[in-house]
Image (spheres, protein in one colour):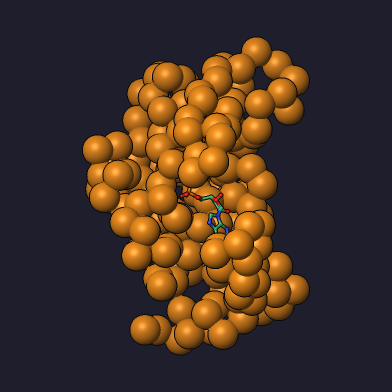
Amino acid sequence: MDDLELQIKSTIRDVPDFPKPGIVFKDITPLLSDVQLSKSITISLADHWQNSGIDVMVGIESRGFMWGHSLAQHLEIPFVPIRKKGKLPAESHSFAYDLEYGSAEIEIHKDAIMGGQNVLIHDDLLATGGTAIGAAELVQISGGKVAGFSFIVELSFLSGRNKLASYSDVIHALSTY
Ligand code: AMP
């Protein structure tokens, strides 16, 4: 484990039984409060992804916006938000998927990605992979190519990584549990 991963893990706050019993929620808000650590995260992500041929960064609402946007700025590429249904104002593509309980629907603006662009998908955390797959589907519907996935945290015991491999096997997480 490198120094940055150690720092991330010692700063993230585990909140048991949130949002429901049995889930240990990885609260990243203490990372946002630590200015130096927050900067180090952006720089480390940028070091990892620079020269990867990424044209566009997609961030998933809402915690995927935090480092997703700062990473896009460092890489000097556009940032595109994926939002929950009904939030985006202009014409959008939608994708619905099942959650453990119930379902979710996410959207992307139709004009956000140009055909053939290489797209990096970023979120704070990879759990079962359902959310990242939804984002990958939206990128493909938009005509983009999924060039990789980026996370701050990966919960490897949930094996989300295996499900993402059919979209891209370029999967990077700064810290793994
Ligand atoms: P999944 O679709 O199962 O991979 O879940 C990933 C999404 O749900 C991400 O947007 C996370 O922010 C959120 N999430 C899932 N599990 C957790 C957890 N244990 N702690 C914090 N966020 C989580």
